[in-house]
Image: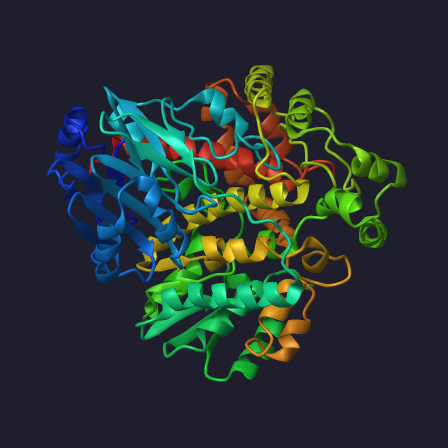
Length: 611
């Protein structure tokens, strides 16, 4: 069981109710929590929760009310005329497609309700049925508290998968009775309180040439940054790789003072600081602060001290002090908005799996690119051809992945032309956990449809969804420092601009992120656009495991995952007591650690005084 998020410092939350009498039970329960409240045009309770001043913008006309919550530039003066023009909840598509930034869009129209988050899931929408009413929220644990729900051990077992659970299991709430919207859906609530998902967004066809696409991305990313910077005196930014460099350079074009932070890794091959200093020299008036590698908390440091209450297992729980270091430093210098480059890798690096489609539409180009990727891999010739000519639908691939959960991990040189990387359960997963995950995958495979027709775009959307959900939790952690953590690359308009570009222009083995390079010409200093390296962080993970092995071993004692029958604590203890074997990636251990830590944090939450 779980209680409501605590009051005071921390993230807000909200619940959306249908416009019907059957929702009265839920509104009564929420009102005992001293929540804020906004009514439907009918007067019935509509939005209840806790949110900071200025977070909610509302427009109303007649029987229509529209609310926008998040990082946006929409004013009541714009929403009110829009409310006057809308006759159905479907009529809000145009408004949704025209908003820059990242926000929830919620509308009550003639007794019907629309609840919509962002395309990737950085702004999520969860829903459940209580009595005869379907209710929605932006946090799964809020609905779990209303239901008095327990953790669903079978769903939790999918969180042990490495690299992650496959679509459509990825991101499913780990609470019994709670569901989540998928990519490109909104929740429709009818006048009787019944709810159902509606698809309103689909990825763009990747047909736009580079020149046009770079201009569109520059416009979309500029607008996304401006939404966060406009009207502020001070903003802070990460300044590391090319993605955060682009965001920082765009922020520097505004009137706010920009403070940039670069973390100097312990890896001697890390060159973030060198490139950051070149960028700052080219930008001019940007305050720059370098954090020495020995000041950064290690991975796994402070595992026993995690007291943040997330609504799902979150990688930030492996090193909360590390996640909070820069936000706290930025807040101390007056920043209340921190911009990051999260999402750039998924959107801009692209997937070589696009070659599977290109081989059928532009075979000459596909062969040229294939040779480059195969040489860099190096990819085995026979397996490369097998994947290239394999036309199995996604559901067949998914069913096969369910059969291979305990197989040896794929070699590093495996080609990347399939529907994704088949996930594996760690060697310490119990037979019951394997059976539970296999059942879920096989059931999903019967009706599963990919996120896009092409393998490349499917993989990119899946990665954007998986990683944005993680960053959503990091942003929650950052509120402890008193600031908002923004990730413009996860904004709907930015994603649309990036995915619309032709894969033969956007994805190449011979250039590093060519789309952002072309988009940022004249904005990012020319020298910084020549960078083609990126710090990947495995060095810190290895050192962290060595230095904080005792904390890892402590998690094996009275393991909550073992208590649920999902892991063999003895096998996990043996693995943590020595360096990981070469065929076991660090991510496999990460997944287990965050699930174990999350279960323990739930126990602390239930003993806390309700907010």
